[in-house]
Amino acid sequence: MNVAQLFPLAWRLARHVPEPVLRAAANVGADVAWLRRADDVRQLERNLARVRPDAAPREVRRLCRAGMRSYMRYYRETFALAAYPPEQLAARARMVGAEPLRAELAAGRTVVMALAHLGNWDLAGAHATVHLGPVTTVAERLEPEDLFQEFLEFRRKLGITIIALGESGSDVFRQLVRAARGGSILLPLLADRDLTSHGIEVDLFGERARVAAGPAALAVTTGAMLVPVTIYYERLRGARRRAAGSPWGIVLDFGPAVTVPADLPRRAQVVAATQAWVDVVAAGIAAHPQDWHMLQKVFIADLDPARYAKTVATAEGAA
Image (cartoon, rainbow, N blue to C red; front, side, top):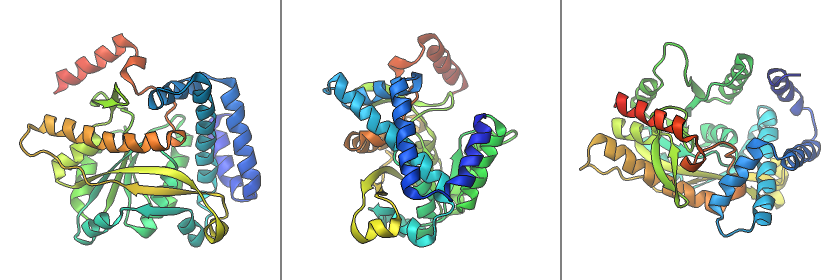
């Protein structure tokens, strides 16, 4: 069975499987993947070693195991998410620092949010759509196409408006600008990994890394508020655990709005604003490293030098 068949099957079946069974299956899957130590798991270890540079190799391995369990928790929750009744969805997430965002939305303005691959961003989006404001975001194009369409349909059913990255004949940034200028929406963008040739080099855990320029560029272009967001898991107890139907919930921690320096050229503004949100999100990753689902290369030292030099040259030539 290929991935395109497996994921739709999981979405159809997960809602009918008892929560304890889903949890156990996800943990087993995470532990098997961790033990096999495929390339993506080893990359997660390398990334986590940057977050915890003083940790011994054995500690990093244990942290990686917790990270894989958190990652599989994301998937098993996402597979069942469409079946959650409103009260269960409300109990599974809580927001911290949301009042400034509510004020912006009430004034008819858009809020751009910079996110990392932390916690469960799909659950966060579904919760925010109901309890904060309408959500528009970008979806990374996946292969095969059937799988990508399943993800799009799933997120649209949650009430999230999707702009497909790399969609033929479209200019994603232009669409985002139009959406931002439409007012009173949330624009969360997963930005801790660059998927284009236009990324920004930043300092991350004492090393150079490449992240997406989108959130800062959008804020600079439109004047929208830019807010870094940390999403992480927390243990639930008592009445909230019973209402959630799970021992785990998520926290949407909205950081202070990024101040974009007005006295710099546009490119320098984007770079400064990007480093500012990265610093806030990095603090969140450091506090909850097991929930950073970064199984890909983000640090410059891990990239192929020749390919990276070509990417930089292409970006500079287009500037």
